[in-house]
Structures are given as C-alpha cells and as structure tokens.
Image 1 (cartoon, rainbow, N blue to C red):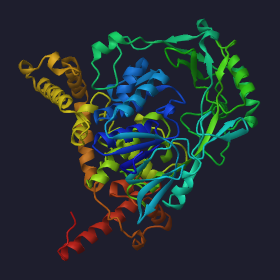
Image 2: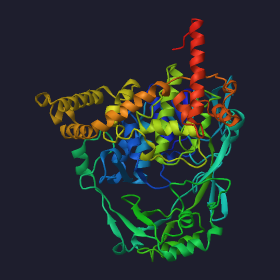
Image 3: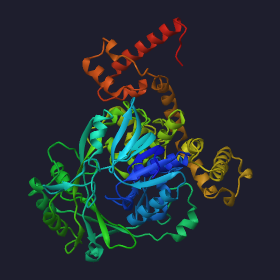
Image 4: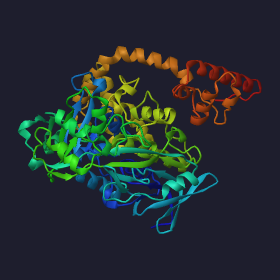
Length: 596
C-alpha cells in the first residue's frame, strides 16, 4: 500500500464503485478501502437494477461514463420496460440481475482500472487539518495521506442487525460493521448523524415452490439494454431471460403478521429510526392499509446458478418462526423452504443538508459523501451520488469547478437538489413524479442530454464519442428531413438508424408540450440561477420569521431557486430575499464592484 493518494474512497458498494472508477478514469491516483473485497457491489436487498425513475438515473450515469448500466447488461437475467403502456416520458427500464455475477464483474472493473488500488481494511478516522481532510487512518493504525476523500459507507456505519427484537452488530448479515468512523465524522468533521432502518426479504428454494399457483411474469420479447454502448442485436442473441412470478398475500397472511406486530423490529408507530415509506415492510403495509386483503408478492430469481429466489414485497422484521408461517400461508409457497431469513438493519446516516450540490461537506470542502450515508435508499440513487461525488472529488483535486447537474438536465440533478435542499426524516427514493421536467429528461435521450458532460470529464473515449456524434447528427438530419445523408448502421453501432428515428418520433410527439415547458423554465431561470453569497447574513432580513431564518441558515442555499424549494419556505420569503439581493447588487454597482 502506498502512503499518498489523490483521492481515497471509503466503501465499495454501488456508490463507492462509481466514485472510485470516476476518479481513477479522470487520471487521479485513487484508493478504495472496503471491509471485504469479496463483497464489492453486493446486492443485499433485491438483485435488480432500474425501475420507475431509477432506470433513467442508471442510463444517465452511463451517458456520463459510469459503470452500472454496462455491468447490468452483462449480469442481467431479465429485462423489462416499465410503464410501457403509457407515454415515453415515464418509460423506465428495469433488469433482474444475477447478483453474484454482478458483484464479480464490478469487482473485475475495479481491479482492471488504471490508477485504482483496492485495500481490504476499515477506515477508522478522517484526519482533518485547517478544515480539510489530509489523511485517512485505517484499523492497523497506519495513516494514508490524501488530497480528498469520498465516504460511501452504505448501511455499515455502526450497523445493527435485527432478528425480531434480538440484535447484533453488523453491516450486513454475517459481515461486520464500521465501528469507528461515525465518531470521526462527528468529532473531526463536525457532522450530525441520525439513524435509519431498512429491511430485507426472505430467500427461498425454487424447488419448493408451486409455480402453477402463480402468474408468470416474463421479460420483454425484444429487450433493451441499459448501456448506450451495448451492441443491441449481438447482446440479445446471447441473453437468456428467466421469468419472475406473481402471487399475493391473503387474510391468513395478514392475521399472522397483525397478531405479532409487537415482535417485529420495525417501529410501526414512529420510533428512533425511520424505515423507507416507499419500500415498506409487510408489517407496515398491513397496519397502514387495513382495508386491503392482499398485497403483490413477486417471486424473482437471484441468479443462473442458484436455487435462491427473492420474495419482492415481503420485507419484514419478524422473527424467523413467524416468517416461515407467513410464507407458507401464501399461494404457491405452502411448502416453501427458506434458505435465508429476512432481517432489518439500522445504521448511521448524515443529514444531506450538511453538504452542497457538489456533495461536498460544508464544513470540510474536500470531503464528499455519496449514497445511503446521505439518507437515500436504493442502488441506483447510491450509484448516482457516488458518480457525482467521485467526479467532484477529482475536480476539487484538479482545482476545477464542480459538476452541478440541474433539475432540468437530469433525474440525478433532481435527486441531489431534493436531498441537499429539503432534507428528510425518512429514507429518500426517486420517482418520476418528482421531476417537473420529465417530458424532456426521458430514458431515451440520456445520451443527447449528458454525453457531452462525460466527454468533457474525460470519461467517454474518442471512439465512442465519434459514434455518438454520428448518431446525434443523424437525429438532426432525420428531424430536418435530410434522409439522403444518413450513415449506415455499421457506422453508427452501437447506436442505429432505428434508434435515431424513434428518438425523432418521441421528440415530435412531445415537441409542443416541451416548448411550453421550456418557456416556463426560462421564465423561472432568471431567479433560479441567481446566486446567494456564501456568507450571506439571513439574520439581516428583519421581515423574515425566526423559523424561516433558521431553515435558510441550516441549508445555506447556493441560489434563489434552491432557497425556494426548502421545506416551509413561502413565496413571500423568496420575494423578500430577492429584493434584498437586488439591493445588494445595486450597492456593489454604485461602488464599482458588480458581481457576475
């Protein structure tokens, strides 16, 4: 192990892998520290990538030069476009993955990456001097110097595993937790930490399932890959899709659960640690919706070479014996045998109000945080933040301006703006309903929106970008009716003329609506992008309430647009802020010191 790196990434889950690869591919000497090299990019919950809004984010990562989409295409065992019966604006790709293969392929990507070293150890302390991280201490006491650090610890910070009311320390089942870093984040970095909780589902043996009592859920007949760089026809020929299956809970299931809520580790009525609202345990579903007599359970394969299947929708914190009763009450699972029981996990997270839109800690500007440590849930949300955190760590070391993605540019921009502006009191999950610009930030045009950014970062190769430029020109020519100048599919691959024609069709379908949306966006943009000085004193605004001042001082918004999205901030508050900023601008102008 060397003694000095440009960037150190702590954690090698979905966020850590994207962060480390981005830094190394941008030419920085990078170290990723993980508790267990055999657990890189694990899928401890559902072994699936994508879904509503999540699929868009994965393709956005790919368009900028990230890794998740490519690995998914090569580890996926079923591919579907969700919402396909609705308009293209909400089409969302999803893939069920071979979880072992996904981990192996991502680990190989890290091992093969130039400028990137991997170390199996525990990061115990961030050494901070003059409000900057200068080194990371590991469990052996050794100190490794660095110019920047990225923390992507997932559920491992003081992780605690719950089996009903019983518990033990762990970051995942049979994996130790990170016992020491929380203290350093608080004491050395000045961060405030909270606690969240989430659950997994049981895994059962496929040979003990009666699939005749279930409804088959096959993959798409003509599946679409996630990555823009996957050659579609060649990929389809080699893809062997496996089916998922649908069954339901019933009144007997609900009685077993409802009679034993007091034995669950999930706090049904509040509690110290909040669980995800949008990925609830079966206990929460039954308590929250007493009028419902059934809930969907999707039986999903976990790999080509395993008998384990995942019971999507049966997240639970009940003890093992009750889990078995609950499972056997469901149609098709009467004789099912459990291979792995479900468990709940509680862990430390850092309020994202303490970081900027570049995902840098406000107190320690060369410390970047990404993934579940920021209070989000989901592999895709984690990978998106990991990519942005890694890119910005590299840009910080290089002395360049950070990458800030706007809400009108990407779902990733919406995710980051939401968490850094509004904060949260429960784990955050992305949905298309959060996107006010969803007509124009679709899954089909991620490359057209974001590939130039990836190219500017050095993450898109010359060869790939040349093909993309041909494709973009083909889209323009088809739109303008210049069909005689179009290149062949051989010249365009992995893009194609069929893809270009589809893109034009979708754009024309939404063109009028997008035009209206852009007019509204341009109207808002004047104040949206208006900068607020870092040292702005909100206490001078005597017309604002004490609560409003407190919220503004907590978030420290960077623009007026960001300020307007803070929870409980009223339009009248923004009007007062805008008037004061304009007054300041005129005063500076009078003194010959106009801000940009």
